Image 1 (cartoon, helix red, strand yellow):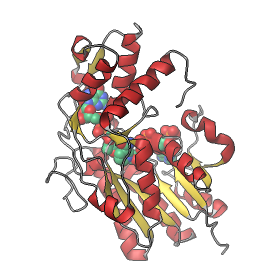
Image 2 (spheres, helix red, strand yellow; image 1 turned 30 degrees about the horizontal axis):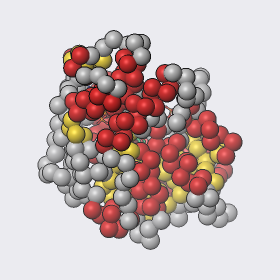
Image 3 (cartoon, helix red, strand yellow; image 1 turned 120 degrees about the horizontal axis):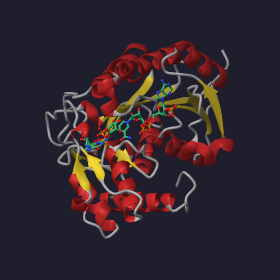
Image 4 (tube, helix red, strand yellow; image 1 turned 90 degrees about the vertical axis):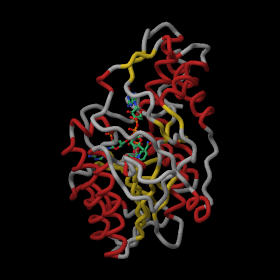
Length: 330
Ligand code: NAP
Ligand code: F7E
């Protein structure tokens, strides 16, 4: 069988927030990047439009194992980053089976494709702090027991353990990054951070009059996506695979996010935010805060962007976007 290309990486979920930042990082490191993209009647390349002439796109879907085998056979990557998922927690309550097929079983399909095509491929699984759910310990570390609170969280627990299982069963270099919430101007508009930054900008321009939200008391450990993709890459450069928590170690409420975002534009969030039952989840994750000591000591990873800077950057980017100063992505 032909050797894999030593500096070629395949990314599933390349059209998503993290996919776009990871692509930039890998291109900077001199990689050839292949992005696996599912078929859609409309093109969703907004986040990677600026990179399109530097990458190769291959058609495939986590729901279809043959397409994954074929993509690996065709492109022979040395590293595979599995970022594709049905990643929105609220949607997972309404579409639990699809979430399980993609976010849970999709991981097995990809690991199996690797085992069949080339078991020397290094593999990254995008695991999540949502696995901690109803937290059993504060702060959460690699050894904190999981207690997921949504079909998404349950699916990610499966994805995590199947990664560990393929590592232990077949000797794959398979790592699981347990990443806490990470945001950016490229975050989907349905996630609370971007929903708030976009609304604050729109309200300041007189284009929106209120912001309807659910639970303002939920607390999250929010970081910047650009910092977090560096941890993914570092995990695959280690001699041994492993599991790593990646987070800031700080926690802030949704209310604090609102306060900062609106105050950044000279407004009081209390004048605009309306509580809407439609955004309250059947089961909530009340508090997340992690401890990234292992990532710091083993990978030398640290974050650069703090909470205040993150919120301000997102609001400024949405203001620019709404005023037509940015074309799509920043
Ligand atoms: P995202 O913006 O929602 O991107 C998800 C990506 O998955 C998109 O490219 C999407 O493609 C693709 N996808 C969905 N279903 C697919 C399928 N059946 N086959 C192939 N591709 C499919 O997510 P993100 O924020 O970048 O997160 C990246 C990964 O990290 C996800 O696995 C997420 O669950 C996980 N994670 C995220 C965070 C966070 O805070 N962002 C934290 C922990 C873990 P389309 O463009 O076609 O929809
Ligand atoms: O919600 C509360 C909501 O949807 C954050 C995904 O990337 O991070 C993300 O999952 C909090 C929750 O992210 C609204 O109830 C209040 O407590 O931005 P979110 P998430 O559920 O934490 C993890 C680590 C992932 O892995 C996921 O893929 O905000 N909240 N009001 C609201 N949330 C939303 N979306 N919309 C609201 O109106």
